Image (tube, rainbow, N blue to C red; front, side, top):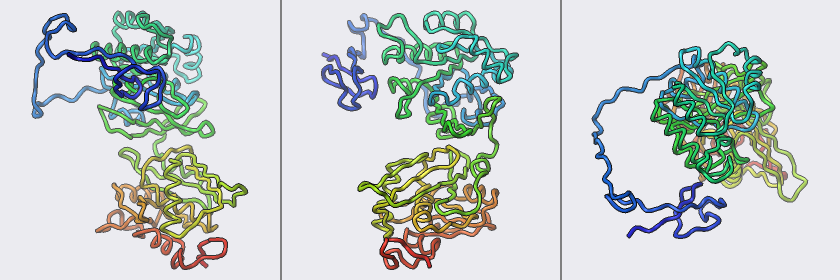
Amino acid sequence: MAKTSFTCTGCGASHSKWAGQCDACGAWNTILEQGPLSAGPSKTLGGKRGNRLVLTDLATQEAEPPRTKAGVDELDRVLGGGLVGGSALLVGGDPGIGKSTLLLQAAARFGRNGLKVIYVSGEEATAQVRLRANRLGLKDSPVHLAAETNLRDILTTLEDEKPDLVIIDSIQTMWADHVDSAPGSVSQVRASAHELTNFAKRRNVAMIMVGHVTKEGQIAGPRVVEHMVDTVLYFEGERGHQFRILRAVKNRFGPADEIGVFEMTGRGLVEVKNPSALFLAERGDPTPGSAVFAGIEGSRPVLCEFQALVAPSPHSQPRRSVVGWDGSRLAMILAVLESRGGVSFQGLDVYLNVAGGMRVTEPAADLAVAAALISAREDAALPKDAVLFGEISLSGAVRPCPQTENRLKEAQKLGFSQAVLPPAKKQVGPAGIEQKQVRDLTDFVEQVFGAQSPQQEGSTDGRVHNR
């Protein structure tokens, strides 16, 4: 006899009995009872047989789903080439980062391209949405507005109107009257997302839902919502910078980890055709602690600047602060530099920043980070025309990275004439850029900073001298 199980709606972990807190993820009040499901006719399913499935094989040819382009290259790139009918998308981002502005501009674009668009706001009145549209110059766009949170009324309206695209702002404000909990709760968010996604699939309507994020940067609510939808997008950026990045972390109709770069202006979001040039636009003369990283975001090469500052610490526990990169990986790079490279940061505060509000997740940034840290510590500037990339292992070796040729081509296009990179069996990339291949951290310090050996040459303050 099948037993009843208890499943956490946050992480999906199974439990033998109900508990107030999930042992796997630590969330409270997320464990719900799940009834048994029988494979054949049973009392659970009313003793009825289901419909037989139509089975196909892997060789079956199916046509590509039709797409509608927004006419904004950066948005179409992230979507995988355009919007797919019947797809469900979830867009998350920090408060005030510009999610509503982005979706209102996208709604206007798709409306002008012939789609029937309905924009449902659960956070603002229609008058507030119109004010934003006037400010963005979109008041004449064919977009239908509604301000409602009752899910039943919204679905009834959508059934009658038969739109092509629906935007829900936001999923945390939706209220399903058949769920006995407050709006924004785990049960409400899960039920609302399920109903909206099911409607999108059944009626072949593209559905875009806005999701709030937690202080950790994850979309609030149960993680099962991210599994329900076809595409998950994050809208990133720092409020102090005008740059905004739309990043795809999941996409069933296109490549994941693709990014689109926008600039926030008084007239709304403007797409950036050349992100590398924009991120490096304010870079002046060579200064200690500055290193240019040639990275890959999705299918496009993007160059950005790492900035490091190293200063004596007045505290017994030196501070490690990082913006735009993983703090745990910074701690690892510092440990490898000290253990394998002989470069100590003991008693020194370390600050690391990615210029322009960019967030880098690629392991290939290790070498650029190490260069910025050593440059800041030694007060020795790197060459202005040099880019760096390479993953550093725990042994201190510099590991190869994919798409080396694309990185070098982008660097040469922006005027860089030399690159520090991992060793390769054969040289690739344009002939006009000098390549310095480094095997490990010792070889890296010798070639870039001129030191014979970090462990052999040092001073009383632990610095590596290149003079």
